[in-house]
Length: 360
Ligand code: NAD
Ligand code: GLY
Image (tube, rainbow, N blue to C red; front, side, top):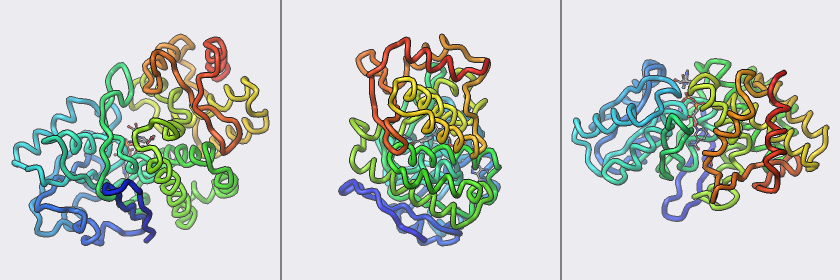
């Protein structure tokens, strides 16, 4: 087992990464301060792993709530069913909510923990590659609104993250690729050596080579932990973690939540960001080609959906969380391994960048 840390003073917490962690009950129990826990899960993950977590909880008072599966259920209506369960079972302020599942469950359970009785304890047990390398770490929680992705939420850190890599054995290939998008993101924004390593090891990752996956998860969590420790509430460098996300969120909302996976939208979005960086003269053709090739090798889309239009992108991107005082800041590339947050572009250049990524 590898243990990393997110350094946030008295709110610091460990990230455990390793095989069969769910079989080590004490690992979970030591992070539960009170005598009760609510496990939040979904209809796909519950039959696979809920028993193991309930066993790990031993004699603690515990209940579970099982959400419908899918990004289209990441909303306030479904969130309310978590509050219903908490209240029906009279869970108090010393309760721990355990998020068991992918990023959708993690973001929703996290927001429930942030808001129930103004905040109860939270443990993240991510079971997708994407959630193990990104969403379970760093404390972003929330739900979607019909008009914008992740528009309602809170920063709320867990007490611990347990990434049991054995759970990845049951993950569908398409979801594995979605997770690879966020892994590639870390290479592109600030780890050029890791980008090179991914170019060499992408096939091993797709074949679920244990050592390759362990390394990719470790470097990703380490990178995210560094960024979050430096800028927890995204007043600066944390925005870099949104490379490809402004374009990607527009795709997710525009296509209807759940149609494109989050990681797929981010994959295409990173290609769009690379093309725009090249049009602005910041990176050369070779850097774009390498970016697109790696994303393609990960079996992710590299173009925007054919059914969307430039106008639709413009409307949807106007409600991005990186709009400040009416100005949209984008994360773009100065080199592979060097991303910047910028508003140094014209509307026409943005429209042109979207246009070249729409299939003709
Ligand atoms: P997801 O939660 O929808 O999970 C993907 C699918 O895999 C679901 O069908 C799920 O039931 C299933 N699944 C989960 N674990 C499994 C397992 N071990 N075996 C088999 N099936 C399993 O999607 P995701 O990609 O994990 O997360 C995407 C979400 O995360 C998006 O809503 C995105 O906005 C959010 N996100 C949040 C952050 C953050 O910082 N909070 C960062 C990135 C993404
Ligand atoms: N996934 C973006 C962030 O955590 O900031």
